[in-house]
Image (cartoon, rainbow, N blue to C red; front, side):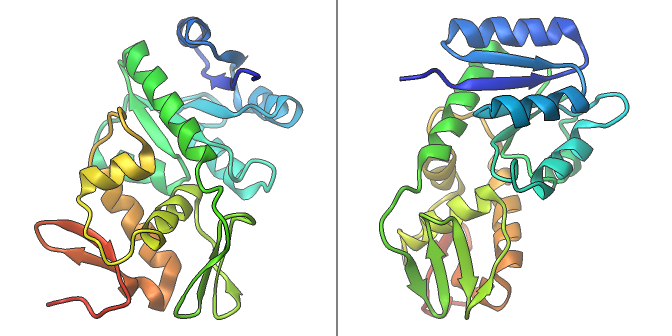
Length: 231
């Protein structure tokens, strides 16, 4: 079985070398880029399985580069973990809204980083389910990675797609934020539960009038249900 490849994008050579050394010991093949231009060329030519992207880079920042990747069909679904020293909630929301699948705040331990990389790659391989799921005009097709409502395509990020898939296959059951993290993001992942709230908001926005299907259960968590939510 071929080893997974990880592209490390950081303008500091010492960080690239440190991260690459840890990942290679864990069995990953590493590619390295010092800027967005080199990184994009490697993405096109080498097609890495995952990108570790530094937020603060000269010329083109990590956030701007991430937005460009999400607009490009060749990289729209590419798993990306942001490496950032920005730990405030507003920065977390900005990174996730730009399309990041996960984030790691500096300084970080190699063990934590490897756990997050493995978890994200496992999540990428999920969703190989069977037939499309239909609910009130909404169609979720895990094979073609397509969502539509009454025949109109619905645009959403890869994390929201996985979150919707989880809800659709676990309807009418209440899940806490921690349980959703474990099911959608994978076990042994160090992530703030606020991440769930951010992606729930993004999923509801993508669903439009169908946002009522994703229901908040006060003091408990969230559920997906066609039944009317209790007040």
